[in-house]
Image (cartoon, rainbow, N blue to C red; front, side):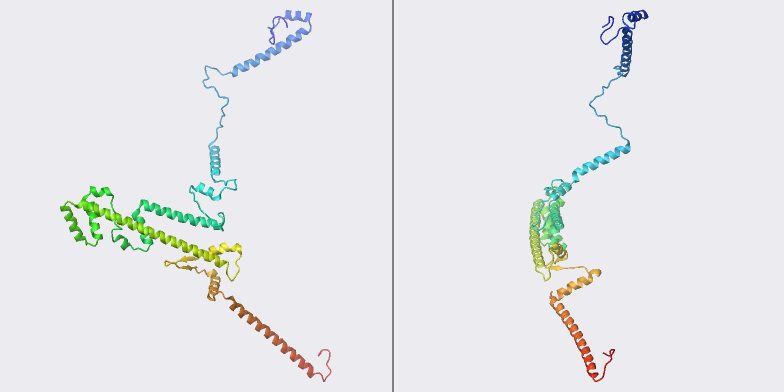
Amino acid sequence: MREGTSEGNPGPNLSLAELEALSVNDPKDLQVVAAEQEAAAKAAEEAAKLEVAKPDPAKTTDVPDPTKVIEPVLTAEQQATADAAKAAEEAAKVTDTPKDPEEDYYAVVDKITGREYEIEYPENIEPTTPEGTAYRENFIREASFAEYEEMLREKNPKGFAYLLHTQNGGSDEEFFGDKKGFVLPAQDQVAASVEVQTMVYKQDLISMGLDADAAQTLVEKAVKENKLLERANASYTKIDTAQRQYLADIDAKNKENHARTTAMVANVTTQLENTINDMNMIVPDSMKPAFKQFMIDNLQMTPDGKFMFVQEINPKELKVQAGALFYQFIKGDLGKIVEKKVRTEAAHRLSLKADKTKTNTNKDAAIVSTTNKTLTLGEL
């Protein structure tokens, strides 16, 4: 290494005399010095660039985090598109059919609706078939009505009592004409109001058969004897007990009727299935479920427990409907129709045969009558 320099860092620029001295001693020294000076200039230039790019600590307060991901700034339209795509992705997570083939189809439906139903399907009905869907819809319809009745029983027991009363053929006069239809106030209102005490006690007296004037006389007597509250509380308990018992009785009767109706429907459904398999005509297996549902759709139950087939008259299908009625009219005996048609065809064939025989006989007679003369070829 040449004196006056350090490793990788050439010394200051040499004077002309020094350069000449170097060139005399070693001609290569001049070229080396020139290269070192060029390298030093480039290093100084790079250092100056770095010094310019370096932030001023006095002016810079936030130090950027090299691990932080900088989100791009979106326009309003781009942001709306991104939000829509995100919403669609979230919806797909909920509505996508599970890839697991073993997962129950309706378990996904229940998850989407937020309502779970435990349904036991008959052995001959697959849940995901049209018949299975219809069975599920009927089940949910009945379950929803039962839930409504239970809600009504808890939230509005008087309304529930009236519903059961009318469902079992009761009239408004029967329901509102006695203590069963009387709307009791809250228990604490009886003790707090003389007017309420009078109303309860008087209603109880009327429900026992007294007219309004007689009931009012007894009310006034109880007031004078300072026994109105006592009589009102007794009447309240009696009316409340009667209403609860009436509600329990009519509820039990309604459940009994429902159970009987369900059994009757199940019985007639079984009869329909057996009849389809034992008809005079063969119903293809592929059509049996649809045909059974067709019959059920046209089936109605009368108040006295009888089942009837009822169809609306359709002008476009009137011939088919009339044909079905005629088939019922002849009690399914197609032999009568077939026998009549066979006889007609046989008579027609005999008639044709008789005409043919008659024609041949006339020809033979003509030939016999002309045997005594010579016949030309044309005559023959």
